[in-house]
Amino acid sequence: MHIGVLKETGARERRVALVPDSIARLVKAGDTVTVERGAGAAAWFGDEAYAAAGATLGDARAAAAAEIVCKVQRPTDVELAIFPSGAIIVALATREPSASLDTLVAHHVTLLALERVPRTTRAQSMDVLSSQATVAGYKAALIGASSLARFLPMLTTAAGSLVPAKVLVLGAGVAGLQAIATSRRLGGVITGFDVRPAAADEVLSLGAKFLAPEAVAEQAATAGGYAKELADDQQHRVLAAIAAAIGAMDLVISTAAIPGKPAPRLITAAMVERMKAGSVIVDVAAETGGNCELTRPGETIEHHGVTIIGPLNLPSTMPLHASQMFSRNVQTLLEYLRKDGKLVLDMQDEIVKAMCLRLEV
Ligand code: NAD
Image 1 (tube, rainbow, N blue to C red):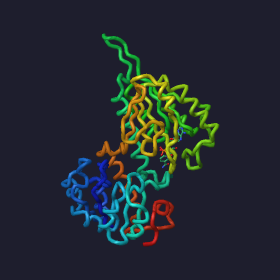
Image 2: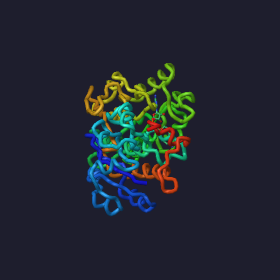
Image 3: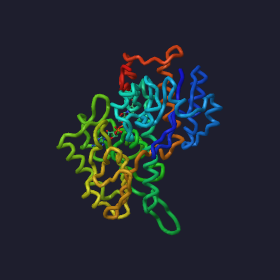
Image 4: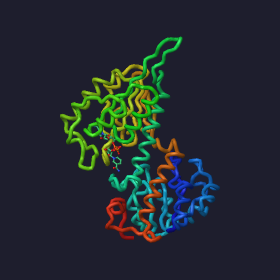
């Protein structure tokens, strides 16, 4: 297979789709790889490391001419112009503003959308949503800790004893569980919440308390294990439980999401007004509208003494490890697509079928 790696052009994107370690493994298996010069620079992977891994360095056009081209974010309209007709691209389809599907079709390009990898055990090692959510949850906890006006852990010092901070993590999927684990390691006292019943045990196993078991519901989870939008009475129970607890919290990290839908609203302005001055909300769901009604995506605001942070593209703020994990996912996908040394897009295959945004070219 001939694989291309393009440099990201988005303003907030520092990751790279394949790192040198993955490229060395692909080259060893017989693939050839062309990397756009500087593709990994923002993630601290230099051109010399790519060359040492066996890649050929070239310009964007040379990388885009490969049989299958890897990117983090889907190409923009301008970038699409350099792809030959019939190109196959592996990238995230929806995260940042990018070309519409119509444009991809007009250029006869096939997009294998990484966020469409099925959440099955078989495909777990190709799942960028999980790997990048791990980064987001970790970073959200650090941002929360560093934005607080107080320590997270309990401290006993000659200058007095300080009580640990109370942290509430809303949404206990991949990002939420990582936020719980990270803020607990920093010494906070953690409470977690999720509407899916399976999440309660995971929260408890990390040494956190679980908020409001009565607000959890079997019908909140789909057969695939995802959350869905809640019925009015259940939404009411969830909001009541959060409203009752939030006034005691110093830090709230919210990560609740419903695939393909705007983020569920879990923190109202009235709830923020109940929080203590100096408290912090880190709304990891800012990208899909936010779990807090006051969140402004990409901004940090203050309301009634509460700092509300709406970070965008958290994985890109830790580009080295985020790229390394992303790259391992892409490498596994490429190996999966390679049959007898050749690239094969088998439309009967459940993973390929789920990811393909354009079938015939
Ligand atoms: P996600 O990012 O879609 O959502 C984050 C969390 O928000 C989820 O846990 C969800 O239940 C929760 N949520 C939604 N609405 C809520 C509300 N109103 N109140 C509170 N919480 C709410 O989720 P994710 O991290 O991608 O993971 C979702 C599920 O998929 C989990 O069960 C996870 O274990 C599973 N998963 C499976 C695989 C795999 O098998 N390959 C990979 C990753 C995740």
